[in-house]
Amino acid sequence: MTGGRSRPFEGSLTRRAAVGTMAAAGAGFVLFGPRGRAQRTDGRLVLDYWEKWTSHEGAAMQRVVDEFNTSQNRIFVRYFAMAGIDEKTQIAIAGGSPPDIVGLWNYNLPAFAASNAILPLDDLAAPHGVSPSMYAQGVRQVVEFRGRMWAAVNTGGTLALYYNRAQFREVGLNPDQPPRTISELDEASRRLNVTEGRAGLARVGFHPREPGWWGSLWGYQFGGSLYDEQTDTATVDHARNVAAYDWIGSFTRRFGLKEMNDIRSAFASYDSPLNGFLTGKVSMVLQGPWLANVINAYNPGLDYAVAPFPVADDLFDASAPIGLIDTDILVIPRGVKNPEASMEFIAFTQRQEIVERLATVHCKGSPLAASSEAFRTTHPNRGIEVFEAIGRSPRSYRVPPTRTWQKMRDELAVVFDDVWNQTSTAAPALTRAQRRAQQAIDLAAQQEQRRAVERGA
Image (cartoon, rainbow, N blue to C red; front, side, top):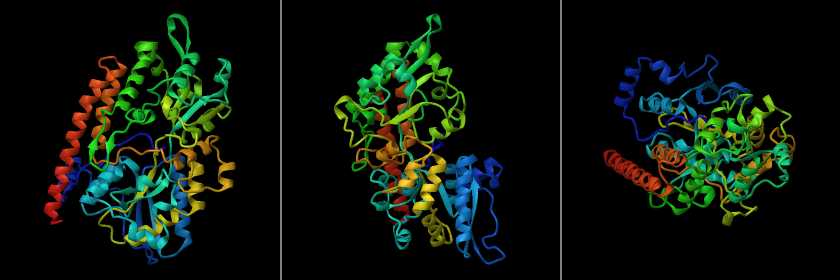
């Protein structure tokens, strides 16, 4: 799963700042993670690999590590699961003691690359045949920044609409025809809502706050954007974004703020048998492929299907769905002693059989340009072809490739709350967010220029 975001890396830490941070924390070993000698008694080079995953996801990656270790006798990779991996990695890099390989989220890449904290992979990857062209069309964008390759994709996630087929039949909706446009989603949601007298909503067709992880990105489904990479300019107040957040506000205007908040409070956490979609309290939900693992674990008999998330009525094109690319990536920190060895391990993880095996356990689609028939036909996620189609789509998108994404995301969270709570309409709320987002972008650009001058670049 790629939810549960940590604060992304913004800017560059000096060695003095890193040491100060460690002193304040009083536990350098916690920040840097376990360390050991770089050479085994059998002469193999030891590489430390920091990753986010625990539980079945971590176990699956450990098996990949084990397979690499037994495939040759020169390199031995050690797997360490890390909470707050992006923050710990930036401190380790600044402190001069980085791990050899790190698994980050794709949204971390612009900040790490712009701050010179990771190595570009173009030259390191070329001898192994690893390049952006090996990935599906939509996925390629997440490994590149300013014309260079900085990462490899570990697992590929996209977002789509899960819907309850049984509940569709119950209210006279065709379970084989999910909503394609926002107006169709609105109508389906209205019909699927169930009210029980004074108790309020007992079931909601769709709830924009479930799970609430991507509240900053609704504008893309309306044809909007948040950032122009070519001009380094925020586009938060784009007219299409205004339409999207006005739509968000329509839910509390139509169904009541208290009613929508009350039923949301009845949804349990994502990885729970009481997840709102699993219990039938919400009929449709925006989620990634990993939700299928939760369904398979707690409610395997659930009659669900998956479709691309609906778009503004004038944007529908079945051949080119719009959806978020939300991947995990592998990077090599600057300062590692054996970057070629780190790349050898990363290249091993990019083999089709390895990619597909890991993706199957994670319930995700393959990020590669093509997947095998066996992978698709035996996959535990019945919506796998939809998720892969979004990954191949020319209209898929990533989060804005700016170092200031965290600031922009925070500002859009305020916009969401304002329109949801009916304390502001969308247009003025987005105007305020636009101003603050651009100020953050300009400040980051000034800081980067100053660092370039200091380096003599």
